[in-house]
Image 1 (tube, rainbow, N blue to C red):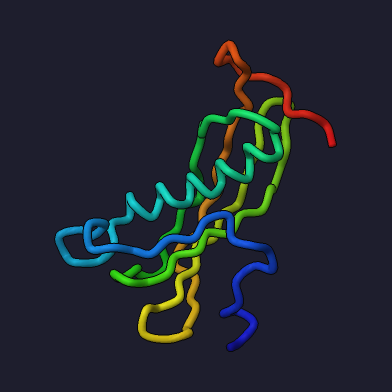
Image 2 (image 1 turned 135 degrees about the horizontal axis):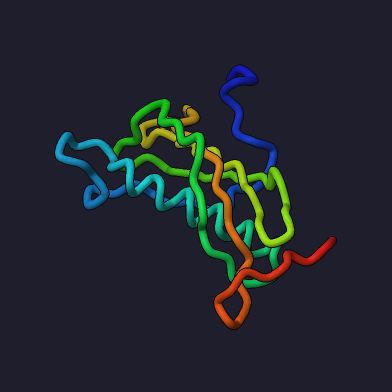
Length: 129
């Protein structure tokens, strides 16, 4: 594999198998399903950093590079890009291992912003580390 074909050097925040129920009318995995997986992965990372509940407030710079097929192993990797007073921005890359081999390819990437939410469901400060 070339360096460009190597996933980020962190554990995936989410791993799932693309299933037939997740397809669009053309038989490829529906982009909305993939976006949801990425939001779950980014939200998990933000939740850990915020030490509590977070809500998605923005998705930007979303790019779909390649299709995902039924049976592909989907792995979402995220890295915190920025921490604000109440927000956390996470860059998420999605890679797949094709079901018929060991080839790994990046299929999409995006930037997700979450806000830390208190018990009152209002924004709260992100703890300093």
